[in-house]
Amino acid sequence: MADDPNQEPDDELARLLREMLSGNASIDPSQLAGAAGLPSDPASIQALIGQLQNAMRSTDGGINWDLSLEQARTLASDGAHAVTPAERATLDQAFNVAALWLDQVTTVSELTSPPQLIGRAEWARQTMPLWTQLAEPVALSISDALTRVLTEQAPEEMQGMLANAGQIMRSVGGALFAMQLGQVVGQLAKEVVSGGDIGIPLLADGQAALLPQNVAEFGDGLDIPIDQVQLYLAVRELAHARLFRHAKWLRLQLITQITAFAKGITIDTDRLEELAESFDPSNPEELREAMVSGALIPPKTEEQQEALARLETVLALVEGWVDVVTANATTLLPKADAIAEMVRRRRASGGPAESAFATLVGLELRPRRLRDAAAMWQAVTDAVGQEARDDLWSHPDLLPQSTDLDDPSAIVARLTASANGQEPERDAIDQALDDLLRGDTERPTEE
Image (cartoon, rainbow, N blue to C red; front, top):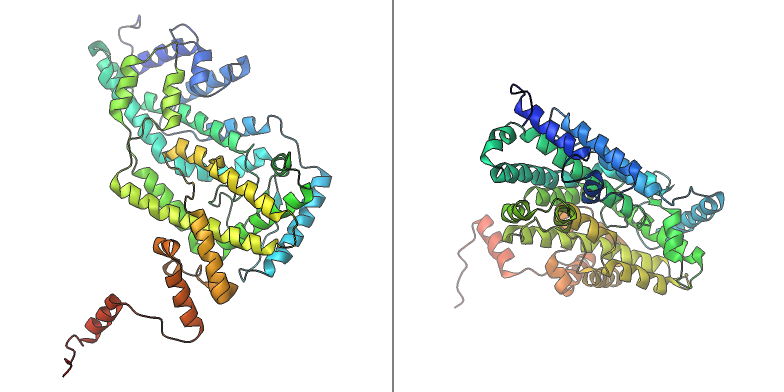
């Protein structure tokens, strides 16, 4: 306890935390840096101490997401180089050719803003607002649960202190989560090759971008000319960006679905209590591992499983459409099939999307039905052409459903009938509904 008996509990807790941060307690700063996912060099430790002490002085109990951006840009900048004039000239030309090729295979209009060539740190800066939006519900849940569990597990003589210091604990917990988010985004900045690489549009509507350094690293070891790799990835990125600009409702729907899913996640307080009871101050890595591995997030409910299935269907439809359009646009590219196979393998192994979303919101966004979706889009293209295919993105009610991925024949038949000016075949439910609305529920019986 403090020497001053009149010292407020909040001040007492702050003093204890400062002792811990300064190395006068059982957890030294280098161990705490490890728990935050940071290197244990002196500069990183000093920055961590300053950031946590600033969080302790916070008055609103919120999460300072500027820490995420700072961590992300620092990690992304490590080993990065600026876009060279040669890279810029080559990739600008690749985008020009890609746009011409796409014009031949899709009716989705071209972008209104020119594609960007950005570095890793700039990618982190531009995408961080959406990352924080998606991560905040889980970050707040973990901070609140941690505060509650620590309060319940504390000795009786400290109950009053912790009860009055929940805001401080919440701020410190939020700061640790924010720094961990920065580590994840910073690592992603070294992996992604484009703005649409993880499936959802992290950049602004209608914005396409490539990361030249990452594109070059992706092409290393493929035994494929780098100009073909650049052109193929430029086509994919433009196709992805064009789709989201054309289907203006799509980006908002995806983000809303992901955010709603994240808000429905609760924290496994039993698991958190076990950690609190067995916590070894010399091994704070255990707490970090539980936080970033999803161990604190309980199994999905039935409602969450249904929401996840709907989300995966939309993501598969997006990626499947991009795959088909890209394949059709790159028929003149000798190694297009080989590059496409590398993209599929990269995606199947998890890629950047799975690790990021599983860490942040307990949600894996791997489109498991991608091949089914691509097969359906190709069947639709073969049957009714690109214009009728692309018109399906004009409104969410027109979008194919999961059953269409199971068996594309129904949607192909419907679109073919419509293209031929025929009434699509109606099922018994549709007919009964029409009869009910007309009041014609009594049909004459056959003689």
